[in-house]
Image 1 (cartoon, rainbow, N blue to C red):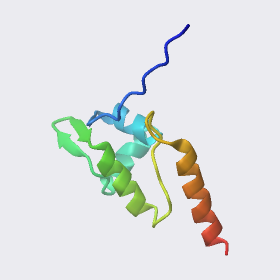
Image 2: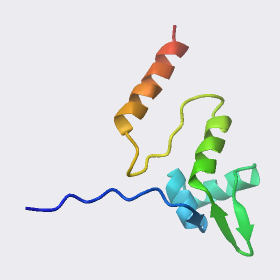
Image 3: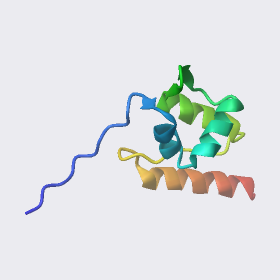
Image 4: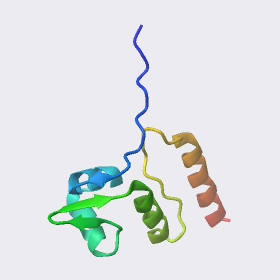
Length: 93
C-alpha cells in the first residue's frame, strides 16, 4: 500500500526570480515587471527574496478587490473556488 504524500507547507521565503515566478504561476519576465511596478520583493545584490504572504496580500490589492489566491499544496481549492464564484455572482446581480 502506497503512503500518502504529506503536503508540504508553504515556503517561508521565496529565493530568486525562478521561485517567485513559479509561486505566482507567471513567466519570469512578468514577475520582474511586476516587481518594477511595486510587487513586494527584497533585493539582495543580484538576488531577490519574497514573502509568499506579502505577495498574496499585494495581489489582492492589485486586483481591486477581486478574489485572488495562489494555489499551494496546503490550500483548500474547493473553498477558494466557491469564494470566487460567490464574488462573480455578486458582480452580476
